[in-house]
Length: 143
Image (cartoon, rainbow, N blue to C red):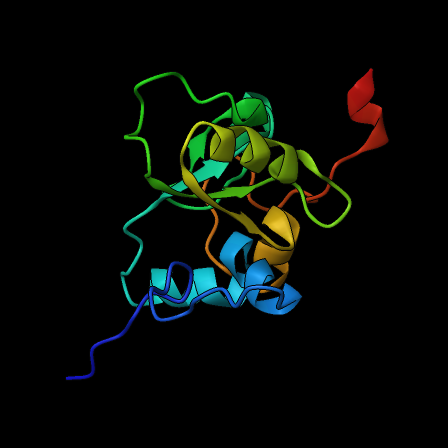
């Protein structure tokens, strides 16, 4: 039986100082890597949805925890815990802002490139009350 290794937090991938691309891999992950980990039951880290609670209830990635704005309550996770954050998609920097806050608190954080928009586009599993809704941020939500 083949033993699989997490593609999201792969300890075999090391940052090479001065190499922008290896450094990006320390802070970002993509849909394929997260889906691989789901498929092979390798998710031993926390997935945070940083969109609003309402949007989370409508639709989210399985096993994700709602954490609007990345405002994780103190003592929720041990310092150093591994976290993947996501928001709407490429047009949203909410996950980037949340990752910055969480890293400052001592967590190992990666941003999911493409967010829930691309998770859905790749036909990955979704949970929630309305998994068929459009999965992108809408201007009308400001009202």
